Image (cartoon, rainbow, N blue to C red; front, top):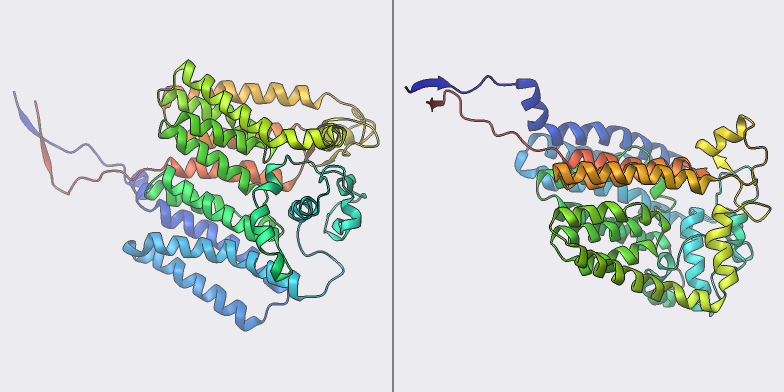
Length: 430
């Protein structure tokens, strides 16, 4: 027996949140990001008229995204470009035009730039004297003389990928690592839009770049971006079932920055979700290993002792040549409570990291396979980086940001607009 029934009762609160997810997220993140950028501009003594023009144009872009649906994608992109990229461009100009005894660039980005310069001059970047090269003028923000002045902690990809641009800029007489990092940011945004077409990708990009505090790191050099761009590219390859390309990109990501290892099992999980079999995964792992060895091997052959001291002993070891415990993670808590007596003393942080990482990977494996939702890969990658780095020897604000931006981007990318049937529509129920 058939009867006419009305559409099931609406849930207006939920529908409003989904329908207005982009304006809510954009406005909620743009306001604190603009406040931080304003403070940066005031600290750098930007002219008041220039600040007013910049933030006024940004407000117009926000308004276009909020009130003109057809301009929402363009407006969101303009807001991200304004609040994220403009301070970086200002930082680059400031460093190269304003005389200062302090290097107006972060220590990580500056060290990468100096490593490329060493390599172009035929000097091994590992074991090189970065203090004599000018790194001691970088704003460390630490209460001790950083031993990083004599150690290059990242793997070779970090300074190899920008090297062609650095070489091309030599006739100009200057180079700034943040130019390459801006290009990496553009690649990261593009990859988020490819991974999550339409609204989810725009939300993910907004969450990733406008998370409050991101510009504070970016103006000094957001040197996690090259690694993250390669991880996202590998995830896109896995989603397209191009597993050998996935392995190649993951290998490049790991030899760019070691943190990429934390995302590898999760990207591999998505490959399995997309249909990769055991043989395909072994081949992908083989490609990743070959690429990694090919990039690292020349520097190991050049000076194995310096490479091991810089990238392994310095980060995970103990003694005078180890990086002292600092920051605000588990290590700092144990040090302040007296469990660890010496900032450079031995402690099994590596074992704790392995336990925590394995737990996140296992949970991610179960969760991602059960729900088959691509955004969850970003979410668990962020959790892995946040939690593992928290229990490492040092945990800084940049590490907090690295995990938080991936988590927030993953959560934002899960948003889907609800289908709203026309008012008064009836359905026939049997």
